[in-house]
Image 1 (cartoon, helix red, strand yellow):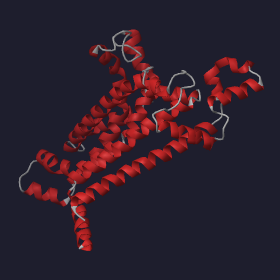
Image 2 (spheres, helix red, strand yellow; image 1 turned 120 degrees about the horizontal axis):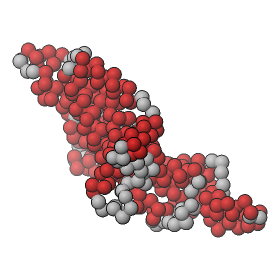
Image 3 (cartoon, helix red, strand yellow; image 1 turned 90 degrees about the vertical axis):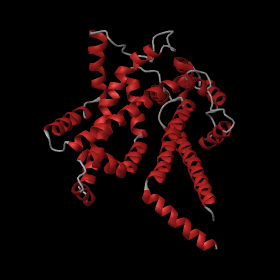
Length: 338
């Protein structure tokens, strides 16, 4: 078996794993959503449900396809989904994809910028703390970082709105942009400032502390003593050796942090009434908007699973140990095939 065949086989394995994971996720969410207490007809008809007769309620369920057993409803939904039809939103009375499409970009902008900024400063802060271990700077950063991490997001968001929006009137308190200014980059940036501050304060130290400890563990290994005896400065050791050695760990943490960052984005959207799929997810669960909820969960699942696959692939490229194991495995398979 040649190397190209092994790479192709690995790629196909990951694709199959992705499909299976998404299939299982769809089944779980579909069943849990429909078994939850509440009536989806309330979302579609509103208060008119209270005045409906039993016959009218039954006819309404038949029209919306809610009268069949759950497994038949799932078969119908998954069949339509393969053809690009994810059903109609019960609350908005529009195709689910039409409701979500205008909001995905807002969430990706907020979540993507938050993700990059958080990890850039987390790595930078971890390096600064590792280079100044047990100094006054390190102790202050550790205490301040821990304090900010444990401040409740909702409370901090309200405080920032009161200070910067209500009292000082410097920044907008809600929305992704002012009315009619969706293409104004500066206006969008002004609306992102407060949500970004919350995202950074609530996530930065969590990851910076992990990276700091990984760097300190690396600095205590035997090869560091050898590097010091050769006259290398601590800054050179950290940048040339320690960072390179813990790079796979950093990438793995960045990959598995996607649900954490995404969850934080959803909370921030609710705090600042930011029009994104996070706020929409809460709303769809509240109103039992099944089709909308299914599509939102699947989109989130795709983002999480793909980020993990990408991180694993990058690790295999940059981690020498994984390369060595792959080479050994390839040699064994070559010998067996011959």
